[in-house]
Amino acid sequence: MRQSTRMCWTAVATVVGAAAALAAGWATRADDMPAHAGERGVPPPVFRLQAVVARAWDDSISTWKRLMVLRAPDIGMVNLRFVRRLGPANCYGLYAGEGPAYCSGNQTIFVGTAAANRLMARFGPEGEAGITFLIGHEMGHHIQNINGRFGLLNSALARAPANRIDLMRRFELEADCYAGVWIHSSDAWANSSRFRADLTRVLNNIGDDKVLGHHRDASASFAGVHGTSAQRRRWFTRGVKSGNWHVCDAFGAAQP
Image 1: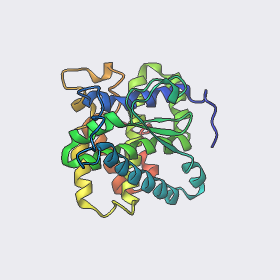
Image 2 (image 1 turned 30 degrees about the vertical axis):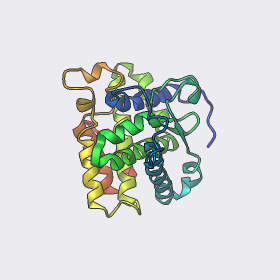
Image 3 (image 1 turned 45 degrees about the horizontal axis):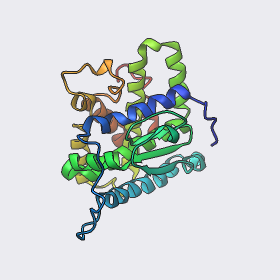
Image 4 (image 1 turned 90 degrees about the vertical axis):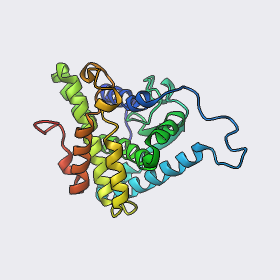
């Protein structure tokens, strides 16, 4: 599916801008791993990160192709790039910080290695589950792109600009639900109760209320559009339990 670089411009900005919030909220330092991290026989963290991302990437694509057979060619058009930090050249002049982030204009998921390694360390024992979920969330944005949800978001923003935060939050929660649909149907993780438990613990700690802190007004921050931990857990669980992406219509819900 070929898109104009000007298509859904507001929605592109919404997604790439919001996607950096989690990494920015968790980041404690700007430096990457030591240049010679592997000299003592220990593989550099980026190797582990790439292995986790690659597994999630491959499984999500194959799973979504089974779930949306008629759109399989479009699903396969998604790209993956590892970068240290997502810059203006990656997404048509839009700056997205460290990622992970999905750019709808070039249908690419960017993984910022420095931030993702810090996130994996922060998640601790749930590190692999956390990174896997984030890839599922970004792939959820690709599914939204295929299903015309970026255009829906743009139209809604044009009609009700005062509701920008609520609309963007619903858009992000919808991607969480799509991630749940993937896990429900995944050959790799569908039957792993331990993995689901790890995902639940991760979701309890990556909502805006946890990342931004209770002392900040999330609604006043561009970063506060992913939803609270309870909201993110609820929408992800909705997808996991149903396995049906049609139940993920966050825009049509009375309350996100």
